[in-house]
Length: 350
Image 1 (tube, rainbow, N blue to C red):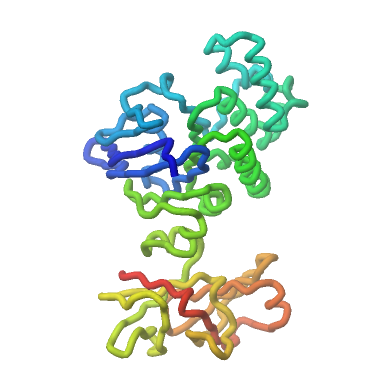
Image 2 (image 1 turned 45 degrees about the horizontal axis):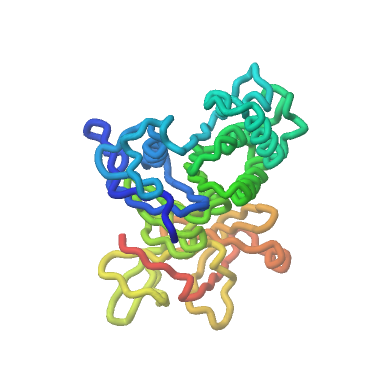
């Protein structure tokens, strides 16, 4: 992987508060990269340092091998798309998109050609003369994206770009952003707290917590092989079952043996299992757990069952697909036995 952007031990302090703590990352040319974390994790501060609005306390930010840390925003080949879109309400779509090129004093013919090309790419050519107030939320988002892309930056930074959209439109725009990024061939770095958004759009995800990098990798690796308990708990839904280790192996709090392909822990630990990896117990399952149905939640594509067990203080969540749910009858209060594979059992020390 050839790195376009390199962060080398980047740190940012605000007085006694360390917002970004020694983060090192390599981001490739034409990569769609997501910075994922909760509020206060340092992701927005990191984005502001990449854009040039915040100087790092220490460390280096290299673009094409050159340290851009000292450069002001206007001297960086980087564009930032704000969450609010910040469109000029008195200007048409075409004027909003061409504004940055006009400020750069490019020839009018070149401006017209580049604006026409990018409006076609984002499928807004027919709406070029409309004002922002005449557009839907998704269309305004594409105008802001076109305005950022038309300047042909090496790097496009997106700060919660879909946060203002409703759920259905947000899902559609996730795929649209991915398509546009592939077509224009520009490196995208998106900041989000939405796990699903990061999993759908990104080629790689970096999880941040309290300014530190917790894990970085492709979406499937992040989801299926979280490196820490924090990462496992932060991405998606995870069931945690307290376990103990002895000469006989691993056991649940119920005394039931637990099989896992991971090495035995050295101290107090939990087993972690995704809801979709649990199933109604079958002969041959590596692990089993008895419980009682306490709640059901219908989600259309699947049925979530909350199971009370003696193995954990919190209910165990099971995700059963619609076709399986159609073949079984499970009422609240019914006994249930769950099963799962050793390979689906992650172990984390507490």
